Image (cartoon, rainbow over all chains, first blue to last red; front, side):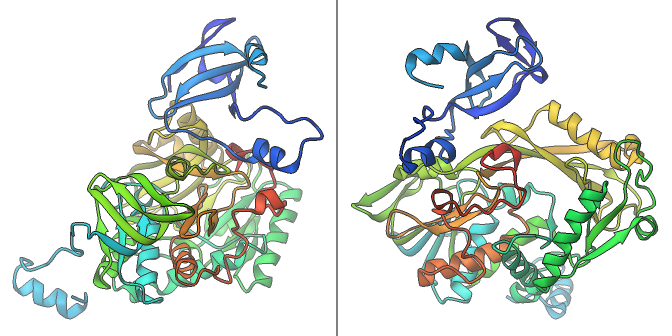
Length: 92
Length: 416
């Protein structure tokens, strides 16, 4: 993986400043959703070999949650956006 | 041919020119009773026990690369059965018993070395936790000994006992634990399975799985289509990737784990030692190199290599435990891909498709489990019922709330 990550707020920053949370899974179900929906959200993962969207926290920088699009085979990062932009897609 | 002192002698007299390859290199047949995807340790062990114990001999093992190119050749070779939980301990102890008789069983020198595994503890609370684990092991008939600091000093004088942050107070030892030559495990199982008629087909990647309703009919591979009665997945590391071919989503993430070997040293560490205040485990190979590893990288990866940040992290943990490591030069490092399951325990079960069987989610504990995993998976394939030591590794345990969380960190794959 690249040693530098382009934070949309801070620019190119060393990878050690970031905390990786993992896959942007299915949207969090409503509190009263059935068990199948919660099981899906909590436990199941796409875990693709290739393009992967994941949450990163810029914990040693601006402390914003980001969404990286990263290739899990080549480690190339194609896009980094603020996680708030996911809300419009019904995510997070 | 059986290997023996006599065969060694005979071949020595003929100047070692008449040794035959240890296994055939067959082309795939059009149909098999059982196809095992994945020619790693677990897949080969499954084929071995399936053909030897359960009498199923029309079996193919499909390996996308060459034999031994995956995690079976990328681990730190440690075997142990020092588990706490009811669902885990009998299984790993079964594996340990198989290790103890393995070389005679498959007639191959795997260099099984029961040199002991010692887990260090650094606080009163950790000693209590280890005492509990040791007691749980003894209740299951597994050997466990709690060593105090003086006993430990005799065995391992080079540890940093007076470390300001993490003083070493003692350790939990399993004397029957140790190391095994990992490549030889793959070769021994491959040779044994091959002698029983199993076809081991290398450089044969599965590219698709054919279905008729809820029945698997066969697989598409880079070496043509092959049909089968039963299909078994033993592809830990790439489980999600293969499962996607039959629209399965798994409670698994793939993560990279690095391992390291140092330059050769004189005899220094004669056991396996693990750090209790971080993640670091080390042993010394017969060639003299220190073999060690630490945490996974922490991000999803299918690339069989790691990052410098983790190299530094592992080196720091090692230095905190054995300061003398500061002068040791690292010879090589390499990476493998782990199936990190959501509770840190493996999955070995039937699936939603009636003749598809799954074996994966081994996190980074797969090597020690190799013989038992093969035996139990073969049992499942042959009888459709789980082996008595592998009843807890159910696919549906997450949905039912019966997690097997040895470490107690919850559904966070990268923490296990």
